[in-house]
Image (cartoon, rainbow, N blue to C red; front, side):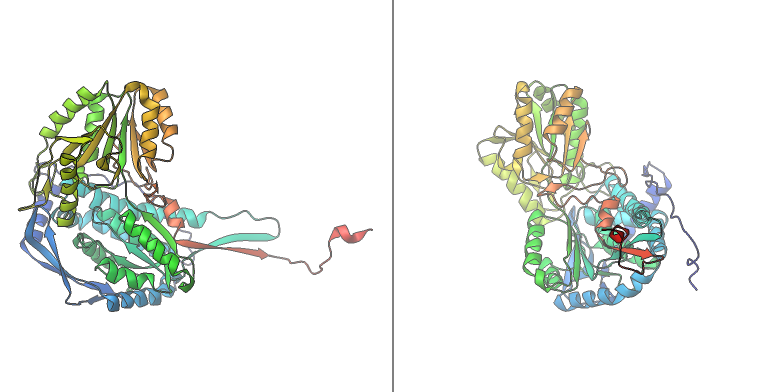
Length: 546
């Protein structure tokens, strides 16, 4: 007998996980130091997980410290087409039993995983995020611990909200809807820059009864592997989530060709997402159903300042928004529009504050800034800096140095662009590079139009203004330029349950992670009507007279 069969259950009300401060001598800091030492002193071997079994291939990749790329933290086995097909088969085989569970039983697994992460594995996950992802302790804490915990707890609450929302019934009729999982498996494709996103991509569909093939980013395999083990400890049945690191082609080609593909949950580059969409379109007659395609992709996020803006607040937002985690956030401020009347003070403020930034390994807690994730990122970002140094229309005014001899270090860099369509003003860089365009104060609305039309992205943006009318004009003019819009704040740091996250245009499908809207994408709703006393004659009353 299922002990939950005769219970109407309310899941715990979710509250955002408190961010620990890691003050000197604090218990959390001591635990973190131990975890950093332990992870740095060994070399893990990371397998695939398919149908609950560890699978090795012998085709190995390396996990290194971005700030010390000769230091190998772990090696991982890469999936090939054979292993990917095994993962698909395992997901399809597991779905029937998984979706038969009462949803509260599924929820209990993810609530336990959240608690395990909060209490038992917090230090290890944060340490791994610092060493493999190159994050400071604060950036690791708000991501690998707090945001991932929040995703798990809030998504359970959103699931209950979805299941409870039912249609009205009329006399003699009972109407209800069944929110079925999708028919097939979901392919979750994770980025390197957020462990929370990497963990949410497979678990959000799984909470709703789906089974998943999960591909972590090749440059961030370690923290997803730790999270996979947490899910198993929490009671996740075999085959519900199948962990398959590997190259995009080796994994993706097999997945996209499968007739059982029911959905894509993706965070990554716009180009890759668009190519996947094209492939799905080309294969559309091969699928058992139309795949749900959910993606959060690139960004060219902006900070727009009005002449009434508070300069110290604006400068702080630019420094934090552009350079926290080395600018490797989809939401990072990458372009700024500053009125000419404020620019001298803003420039001075940027020079002063950026000069204070300490750069180095995250194990030194005094550092604000670290290395970018890998060689490919280093080469791409430094190429943008080189371009700005040799091309007319812009100049590097702060920073611009880089060195990959030990770690992939690039200085916080500010480029002043006379040309508002300069390459660094419109293209996604995904690194610690902010490009500023100065506009004439009286051209405020024209500059807003420029901001709206000069980039294909629409993820995040911010307006700084103490003049409420100016802020209101900006909100209207920039209506479609950002899915997350901030007033007098940096365009980063969306909190689960408070600021659902996602953008439109070339930034994605705007399905808002951290809200019930995202969970709805992972169900296929069936309407059921029961008539208690059905009619026994086809004739209607109106037919009783001529």
